[in-house]
Length: 264
Length: 243
Ligand SMILES: Nc1ncnc2c1ncn2[C@@H]1O[C@H](COP(=O)(O)OP(=O)(O)O)[C@@H](O)[C@H]1O
Ligand SMILES: [Mg+2]
Image 1 (cartoon, chains in turn cyan, blue):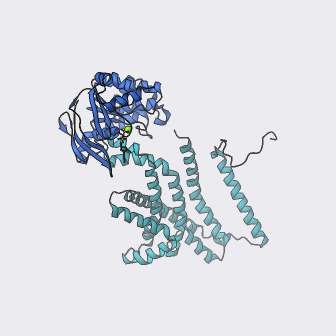
Image 2 (cartoon, protein in one colour):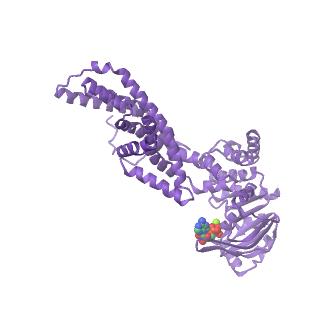
Image 3 (cartoon, each protein chain N blue to C red):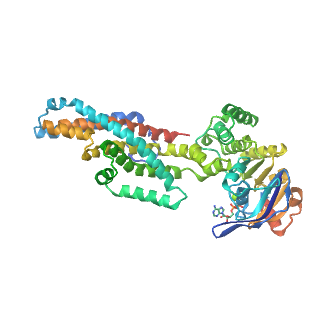
């Protein structure tokens, strides 16, 4: 122990950055610390835990959680599609298409999701007769995430060296084949970590759909909260439920990044 | 191969790169394009590869004019094998798949047949051990040899090589050039851009000297190096051979 000298934690000299096996213990430590902090804080205000009332509503928790999973899964597929189309439009040879895609991206990135949900739901969705709030929610969320995903995919596409595209064209690949067999596989590897990060955000952002009455996880927790006059007893399971979805994705991202770093 | 280049013009924006480029009718197995940097060699090769369309002028390969619309040009490109300076191979695929993909996707060769053809080629050029390596796991010379095999695998009517050895050390370059010489011996028509004049002399039948977007000198390889046809080409040869 004593023989090892202290090292500056951000040193640039190559050290073993093989963080994978250590990530989980650190995470657990973080959870324990946060829980301890909570416990201490609440103890000092003499908070009395009462999970009994909330436990009665466990089915409602689960239903909400399940709705969130389905919303997120549907939005994940749809937003990827939107993102792909946006990225292609941004690279199109037609100027109006490029301009439209750019406008969409900037509009979405320049306004809060909450405002988009309110405007699109009470404005557009009602006007076009889309009265299923779940469908509307998925579409709105996908439009939001699609803009970010589009930029991620575009950056990935642009990271593919021009020589790769020229080689494929020289061999007689059509434009579609160049995308399918060269650009997208190469860009895909590049963007997968950023993309899963975006999916983590998507899961969390779906909680905002509660303001248009989509009975997802967060709204369920709020209803249980008001029914039981509890506070933390309904919100702690909420945080836990989201972590259950996002942590595996984050771990997956970390592993991907690790693999990409060492990939030949 | 018969190649006719008639009054080719091509500019990038305002910069003219090919300036009414013409050549005497070329009829040979291996043609070497030499000349100073920026003279337009790569551009001419890309035009012959069907990757760039000249603003004016005509190219004929074996008597047929090169098409001028993208669809027909793509058909034409399928039968021409092109190898650039470096980074030819698809980075996400191993050597074998680099050979197989164009055969299956572009030429509709059944996968099993494509794979056996690819393996045969790799074996012939002693690259079997590297079949399952990605480009980044191969040396520069191995990459270029695999790239040449990929160009051969589609059974091209013509192979175009743009300074295939300029990014390589001398030993690797020699291995690549051995392979190019072998193509020439087999009667596969080759057009080669190179700075290696000794190689051009031994492997090429005809030399074209490109300068300022034109072919300024053209002759048989033997003659070119004993009596460079123009003053500019003589100066170029002297400069390159000085050290
Ligand atoms: N894609 C391009 N855009 C603009 N200029 C180019 C492009 N490709 C080549 N050029 C210009 O054309 C001229 C000839 O280039 P090139 O054909 O590569 O010459 P060489 O291969 O003989 O060195 C150079 O001045 C170069 O800067
Ligand atoms: Mg060049």
